[in-house]
Amino acid sequence: MRPLVVLRPEPGNTATAEAARALGLIVHAHPLFAMAPVPWGVPPASEFDAILAGSAALFRLGGAGLDALRSLPVHAVGETTAAVAQGSGFAIAGTGEGGMEPLVAQLPPGRYLRLAGERHVPLMPPPGVEVDTRVVYAARGLPLPPALAATLAEGAVVALHSGEAAGHFAAECVRLKLSRERVSLACLAPRIGTKAGEGWQSVEIAGSRTDQALLALAAQMCQTV
Image (cartoon, rainbow, N blue to C red):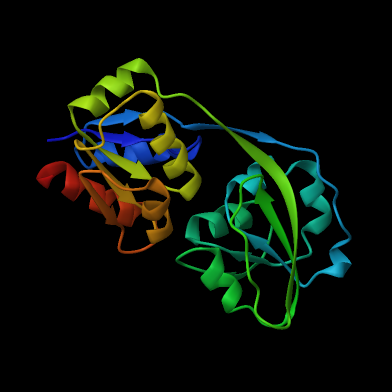
């Protein structure tokens, strides 16, 4: 059985690693980003119809500014983000699957406040939908440690939860001169596989945008790749 490498930031890293070990997988957990809040200007809630949330991290790192926005419902990119938003006191207006672009394409006309990380996907809202983006947190890329690089060199499956993680992981492999031929990628969405580039042993996409689906795919890949 090949080991599974989990790179998502905390606290998701620990949760994914524990779930993977419960499936009997050999897991190497190493967050690839350190997350931190950034100062941001909080606009009046009355100017917007709802919040657009592309990550659960914004509710953990948005700070006291979120208190003034709790009257706004949230359109969340996925079930995890929706659950964290609800746990932070926000009502959920809708939950998407497959990324921010499909979520925004289905929004009713209105003005939306997008709370996002420093690195976020540009959006092309449909007619009648206006999006104002405010950055509330930043992610600092971390280096791959030598021990993990040695594991990857021997062959592993890597779980990737975001396009930013895919790009940074690929760059780290270049920096460390790691061959991609023995590394397989289990990706949460198609965009993530695209951001990772080419040359990997295999690149597979989860059947749905959930951690459970990604781990089911990764478990299969660890057994068969």
